[in-house]
Length: 208
Image (cartoon, rainbow, N blue to C red; front, top):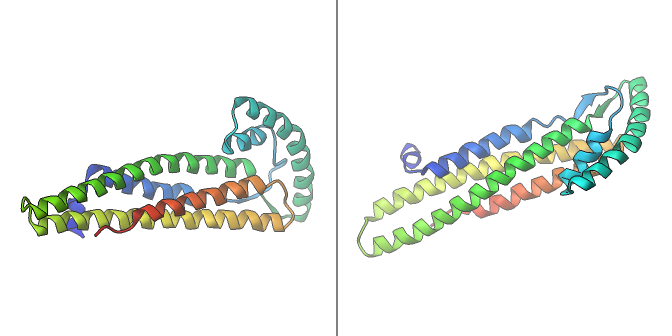
């Protein structure tokens, strides 16, 4: 393992570090929080629009709707929850975390595609060099081992993040089942992020 690690490129090491950092971000989403007054408002209405790809104008409309509908709904549900001493989802915090995950994953996706493309091109070149007796088979094998080690590390990190997002999705569904509404967009965003993570793992098939 040490030899494989020493043969990794700077880009490969950075990708490993960033996917491990992504684990922390996806693991920090705490869906359940003790109720603290109204649940929704202008920030929620705006934030959900941006999360789903809306623009500034859409954001302003979402904020207006969120301030009225979300605030009234949140206040009503919040009062009932306080009386029953149950926990509700703190939507603004979940939203902020989901947006942070989405942004970080976007950077990882860009790196991942670049690294895998570079690795595949390098291996094709190295195979030609082995055939032309420019390098030894052992040199090829050493670099191949480093590439596959990198792919295993990154794949494992993406898998952990996907499981974290699956838990977030499950927790949101559980909250809905217990009677809390207005979580459909957050649940869909968590599911979409989990799917993105799983798709990216498929790019990391071990090289031969």
